[in-house]
Amino acid sequence: MAELCLTRLELSHFRSWKRGTIRVDARPVAIWGPNGAGKTNILEAVSMFSPGRGLRRAAAEEMVRRPEGLGWKLSGVLRSLHQMHEVEMLAEAGQSRTLRIDDKAAPQVALGRIARVLWLVPSMDRLWTEAAEGRRRFLDRMVLSFVPGHADATLAYDKAMRERNRLLKDMVRDEPWYLALERQMAETGTQIRLNRLKALQLIAEATEEAETAFPAPQLSLTHPEGELPATEADLLVAFQESRRRDMAAGRTLIGPHRVDLEAFWTTKGIAARDASTGEQKALLVSLILANARGLARDFGAPPILLLDEVAAHLDAGRRAALYDEISALGAQAWMTGTGPELFSELGDRAQYLDVTEQGGESRAEQKDTAT
Image 1 (cartoon, one colour):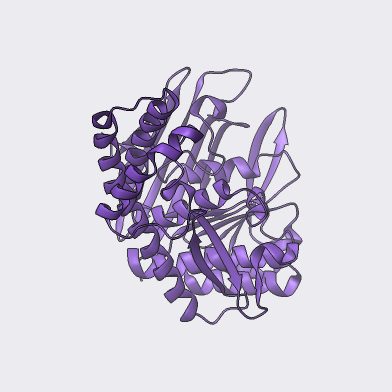
Image 2 (cartoon, helix red, strand yellow; image 1 turned 90 degrees about the horizontal axis):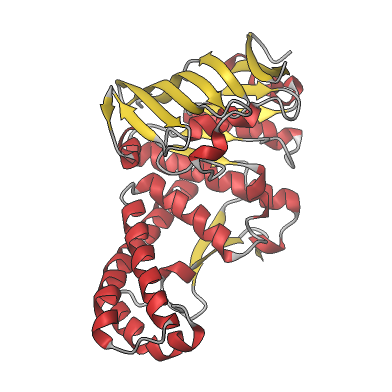
């Protein structure tokens, strides 16, 4: 199978990194160091090599190193499907981010054609107990990994819905004002539904075919108004029939923007939200691995994985099982932890970085082993 990996990462005035160059190969990358040293900032930098705002969902201005405030730059060499790509991102002070791929200006969506990046961060540990919005965001990141064009559909749907909500709040009753927006929402909303169902099917197939030490959750989509209409025509009718009720609420009450993702642990017969903290973490790891296996088959190479503080809530047995599955998958996984002992089971299957903070700057030193 082809490789997908970042072989060089250069950071300039990005978060805690004034300057830094990291050279690695396609093996997993284990990163340790004290809290606040800049480990997660490395993972965030790698996450910027995929469409979107990265694993922290931060604006470009928030990533600028302080106190200089000069803007930031990330560059790297990406090996993808037997090709090498030079990628450069730049955000000057007060400006939005720009992207160049192989020395040519490119839109963010172009990253989705050459790379797939998945991540698991500590804030996601609350996924099954927080509000539905977080689960939708998690769901759509999974969908986007399989269908890069999903971002265009969601952006178009959200734009039309915001305009419709404005009309509702202003108590506008003229049908022509709504019809064009509702047609756009029906078209893109149906595409969003199909994209989500495709992703869940690919993940289900990847879960069934794998031998894994992690629980296999059964995923489903729910909606507070019942099952969403399956066709564009029926969804358009639903928007039209819901106008009076939506006007009273001041917002659109039906549509893919209210869908929730549910996970059921079939072996134990419990919903993910009712599982223990450790079990919920294991379910999340299982989903990320299934997503990665599905992508390896669909994209032609396993995705780059970003696993921040991955050892949290995993015992030594499951931690070793995770490393075995990552190695068997052949994915370049960037993993962080507070100490090298958390990665001892990897041995020579990985490469190691010791990250420290010196004089207000993050620095990384390459190590031969996790000792």
